[in-house]
Amino acid sequence: MSEIPDDLKYTSTHEWARDEGDGIVAVGITDHAQELLGDLVYVELPEVGTDLGAGAECAVVESVKAASDIYSPLDGEVVEVNETLADSPEAINEAPYEQWIFKLKMADPAQLDNLMDAAAYAAAVEAEEH
Amino acid sequence: MLIFQHSRPGRRAQAQAPADQAPLEGIPEAFRRRNRPRLPEVSELQAVRHYTKLSQKNFSIDTQFYPLGSCTMKYNPRGANAMAMLPGLVDRHPLAPESHSQGFLSAMYELQEILKSVTGMAAVSLAPMAGAQGEFAGVAMIRAYHDARGDQERREILVPDAAHGTNPATAVMCGYQAREIPTLPSGDVDLEALEAALGPRTAGIMLTNPSTLGVFERHIDRIARMVHQAGGLLYYDGANLNAILGRVRPGDMGFDVIHVNLHKTFAAPHGGGGPGAGPVGVSERLAPYLPVPLVAFDGHDYHLLTEKERPDTIGRLSAFGGNAGVLLRAYVYARMLGAEGMKRVADFATLNANYLMKRLVEAGFTAAYPGRRATHEFIITLKPEAKELGVNAMDFAKRLLDFDMHAPTTYFPLLVPECFLIEPTETEAKEALDAFVEAMVKIREEARQEPEKVKGAPCNLPVRRLDDVRAARELDLKWEPKGETG
Image (tube, chains in turn orange, yellow):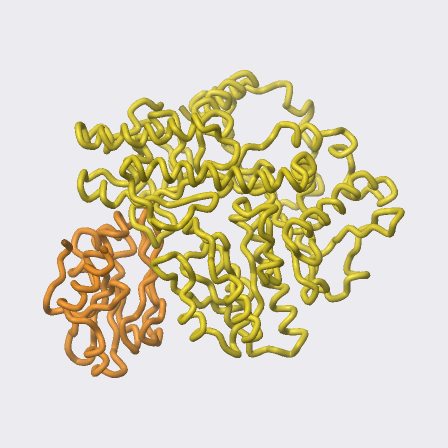
């Protein structure tokens, strides 16, 4: 069973979101997602300043097996991207919850409540397994 | 060993070397290179031996069981090659006048007619030079159709999530947005999601049937009605035509446009990116937009139709008329089979796939879509083996090489974890299929007894397991002599 920290919010497409305060969330992919993808070899980051709608494709992670889109969990503007991932995509495999991919300035912080909590995400992963 | 490592300064393949230095006048200074190209300097015989040895290390349909199937390349009958290489065809100049090309043009005209008949479409163009270009031409025609009607609001192409990656790429290349439609656990398209996605923005849907999941879309007639009612058109990706060749026609299913990969279904050789051929077939309403040239027959002579006779065409896709050599091979293949033979292709392709699936399931492997009949291909998931034995689909694939078999497609489609997409094709004998099952059982046994052997496979080939992760992360695409860079 993959790791699912209690203090994060999750999407059905395997992104996590962490409330950083001041209306900012950090977004990454879950341990389960990196396990499915295998060793990452490339991360395509969004551009700072891009306005995203919830569910919009905004980044790509690529492993030797597959390329996978990353979707924005919330409406908002990209305010920061994790540049170190461009050179070391494997960092996501090593610590998926430490390696955020981008940070969003939320348009509506109330939307965080629409995302899954750890228990709901664990159930969703479990359901996918069967 | 790289050919560069055989290189010795000054050594030449004399037979191919030009006798004199070509004069440089006429080439502007700005376009002349400063340094000589760094090419290997070897003798003719060294070059022959080097590449022959490389070819002997290769796995191919001519030497090994190759369950990538028509998706990659099925067996190319030698007869088709021999006929397409007749001097009258090979020596014909592409600019030769029609009066000197009647034999070639008659073959192309008949190929158009054969493809019309076997796909159930109203008209066919042989112009696209590859499957991807066929897709592009197909969606460009959908766009031309909507544009001609002033229907500019239609900006979306629907694509099931089981589709080939080329489908959404094609939609985007044609200026559309791709919208994904989910697939049900049964492998069929989710009709409720389709209904919700259809509307005045729908330009069309791109479908592969049978789908990449190796199952036939059972509600295709309903999907066709729904899409047409919404004002959209249906695009048929011909990648899996092998399963239904001569038995079911995309035109009868309600498709408006189709591309056929002749280099797959019609056994023309290809690989390494080409050359291919992706003719497009269309229903009546799209016929005016077909790419040119087309071949017409007036009852006496064959003619090329170009922009002059076809003013609404989406245009040309190449300077001439498609990949003549590939088209000729496909034409001979089709003529060798005849209408009855094409049905046998589909029959034996599906029989072989179903036999192999049943035997693998009996041997304890897990079909991804149990209860669904296989088409010309099927999927097994090695997730139980990965979980129980710690040996994944890639390990099985690599170990198969040691058993002198090419691995099936791995990790595609993405919807199925740890999957093998297996397509034996119609030309494999029962013994080859049985040997594959035996190899799979043996590998699973090895995974229990000595898992490290399977995880380290291949063991008996010139190279062991390649570090594909490192190769992708640290790209090294250029040979440099030791100690030099730049």
